[in-house]
Image 1: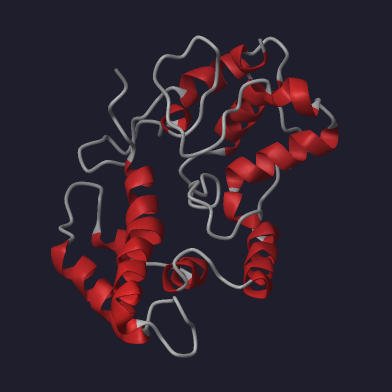
Image 2 (image 1 turned 60 degrees about the vertical axis):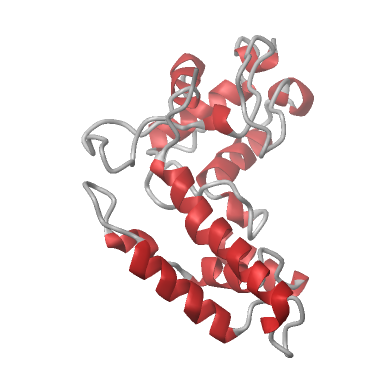
Length: 221
C-alpha cells in the first residue's frame, strides 16, 4: 500500500489548510472580525501562528523555515480559503506571472518517467535524503488509471485527461502551468505549487505533462 506522504503535502496542509481550519473554527466560535464576517480575526491569526511556531520542531531537512508563509497563504489562511473574488483574481494573476516556462518552448517529456514520478510519495520528509528526487505524490489526491486500487479523492479524477482535452499547444502549456503553480488558477487550491517551490524541476514537470496527455499513457487508456 502507498502510505508515504511527502512533506510537501504536510506543509500544504499545515500552512494553507490546517491553519485555515483552525482559524475557521475560531471564527465559528465568535472570534470573527467585524470587517470580515466568517473570517479569522487578527487575534485568532496571531494565536494560531504562535501555536504552530511553539509546537513545530525542526528535524532533519524539515527546518523551521517551513512555517514561513507568503502573501497568498496568509490571505487564504485569514479567509478560511475563501477570499473575495476580486482578491482571488489579483492573487491568481500574480501567481500566473511567476510561472517560469521551459526555455525550449516544449512541454512534453517522457510519460513513463512521469508515471513513476506520479506514483512516488517520497521526498521532503525530515528523514528523506535531500539529494534524491522528490516524488510527485499525485496518486494521493487523484485517480490516474483504471487499474489503480489505491488513490486519493481530494482532487478530481485524471482519467482520460488528454483524451478529453486533446494535445494542442494551448493544453500543453495550461497543464504545465497548472502543475507548476495551481494557485494561478485557484488561489486557495489544496494542490501544492510544485514548480513554484522548487519541489519538481522542469524535466519532471514535462514528464507529468506527458503522463496526462500522451495517448499511450495509462491515464488515457
